[in-house]
Image 1 (cartoon, helix red, strand yellow):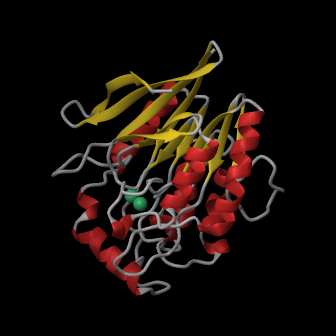
Image 2: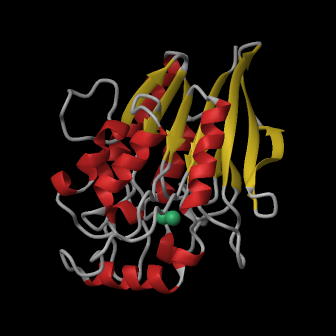
Length: 301
Ligand SMILES: [Fe+2]
Ligand SMILES: [Fe+2]
């Protein structure tokens, strides 16, 4: 029987909480809040996020991968609200989350910030109550979710990310071990993981190193967000092709040049010793105001 995995990203939950621009003041947060009030709030509609979540729940996938940017400027009040949004969506054992740059917009002490979302980014082997560490691994039947954290506070004009040496050193052994045990390896990261997939100002600083690890050790699927558009790249690995897939924002209404909200459903099965992944894209239709099937295809293996 096929195993099903849903992928969504970049909820950018609004509106901004009162006082978000000024409380626990940081210049980057103030500029980000102004940017939200002038421009971004017109593109991100919480009604669409709710419709998309309802659509995923109706599909009833075995697991959900959420690749970050749940909030906007990492205001202290955004974290508990984001946690409530996730709790309404589903159980932490059913949803795996990795932070985006907007979830680490400025430095925030762990207990006031990402601790609220920890149940959704804790590996199976982590001790209860411990601080989340990355990469985390969650095993669901023959699916292994590997969660990477690229959300690192950036300077004023940057929206990039970075994994750092600790995650990069841990990743090859994990990928190798999970392959030896026969798992389908789905890697989650907020930023596009290969060089050249995002403009330098918004890019993952250690993408070349990550590309080399993926090419060497392999992965059956790499999921990301951040660019707010449909993306499909194929990395040629030592043991086969590695599909690298990005989804649009969960809340985008599709005005201007923006792509409308969408999520992907991956149906994973095994055929004569080979993994087969079927992708269904379900996108927001602004005329009928509901999610509709947009495309369906099989990933190159
Ligand atoms: Fe985003
Ligand atoms: Fe982002």
